[in-house]
Amino acid sequence: MYPSSPPTTPQRSELSRLFLRWLIYSLAIFAAVWIVPGIEFTGPGWQIGIVALLFGLLNALLRPLLYFLTCPLVILTLGLFGLVINALLLGLTSALADQLGIHFVVNGFWPAFFGGMVISIVSTALQYLAGDVQFRIVVERRPRN
Image (cartoon, rainbow, N blue to C red; front, side, top):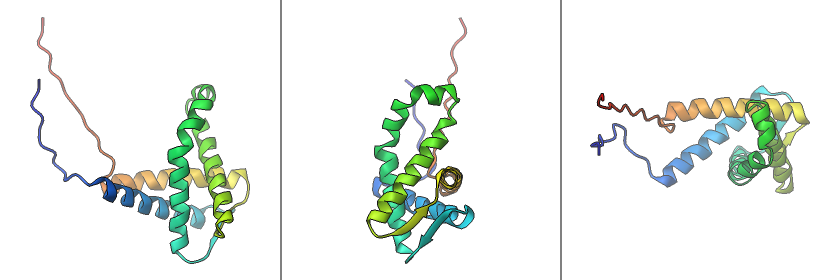
């Protein structure tokens, strides 16, 4: 119906978008380790990339299921229960990293809670700065009757 305008920004391939998100999650997890007391990481720097990969996989695979199972709590708390889900996923990432021999430790619920908040804020800001978040505003003008 309406002609589409050409995109003003170049489109990235799916592989480059995945790599960019992995890099952003790596930086966000590094920021959480740096800022939040109770989250510890020791080891070579490339291992934080593995932690980011684990965290991204858990987010992709388990987050939708957890949101579905806790939907009434998410609605009742106006979405704030999502922070608890982030904390749970960060703690699970810590347990999986320990199984792989990576020293990424989250000491309890509150460090996981605040670490999840830091990761969310930093990754959202970096995705926005990298141009990975796309906003599309469509204005339709309807004829008056």
